[in-house]
Image (tube, rainbow, N blue to C red; front, top):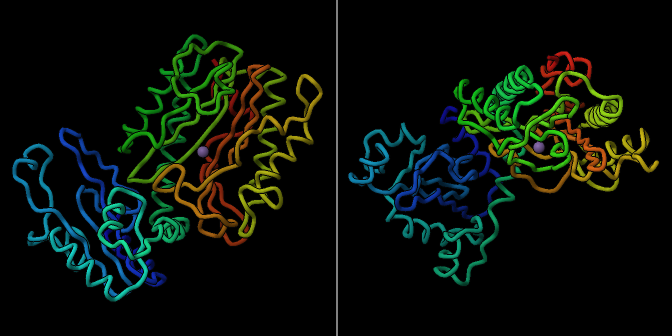
Length: 391
Ligand SMILES: [Mn+2]
């Protein structure tokens, strides 16, 4: 992602900021292998993946503080950047980069000119509180989340790429799916596809649940053998260039849904289509009225029954979806959908008594007058899924 993207995000933040915002990058412990998983808010505003840095932003300035070179450490972890490097402005995209020991001096100056302070809840903030006991420190997460919820064109491209790779992984898993195969073997095919495409790996622990495991929402031990006649819920997606996707499909082992499995499947699909059709700015994901969760549940209650003649809505036990971005459950603040948000639409019906769990999850972009399905290329119709997994 180009450094201009991060510069634009900081400019955006500064427009609405009414005080000092402080963030700390991840720190690294001894003998810890530091991966590129930077603290997401810090990454969102800087694009900087090295540990130990700090960020100070006010309406009138932005400073990145970097630790000094440490030759011995860099032998272990590779070359790092430091404020004294000649290329540090080009490498970081910051005009003002300073060595870490200047942080307190600059913070004092900034606090002298601004009343409000924003920081994340962390050990770093605990230190700030003891340093400035008379200053109220507000949570920095909501103002940054407000920005993170509206995706830029570069972010949409990254999410679309992670989605496309995820769809390819589901297709590869379907091709392999057969009676006698273990859930972890499908997981291996999914993760292999992510890595083969140059992605960092999984956006979250893959869920491959066959038979009774299809009814377990966050099943991820993936150690059961799948047998003919069972459904398999595959909830898995890649993280590519820092961005996640989130995709679920449910398929029959062997290639044929039973009549009951198909009935439940079609009700979940109908609920999903109803929610996607209703998605637009102004409506909420969850809530007792005017929400996509309610629309999906109402659809389920109006179609089909359980073995006791009861409506099916009560088997939809989670919300319809969530924001997707740098994190698979991306930052959010309460409120209705707005154009530019990317969210999942993922209704499910889970009936342990019948060993049937069905979830269908897609990623949509909310547009001015509706929603665009970003994962439309992967079939959702039961006939097409049967054809794709037939053996
Ligand atoms: Mn999800």
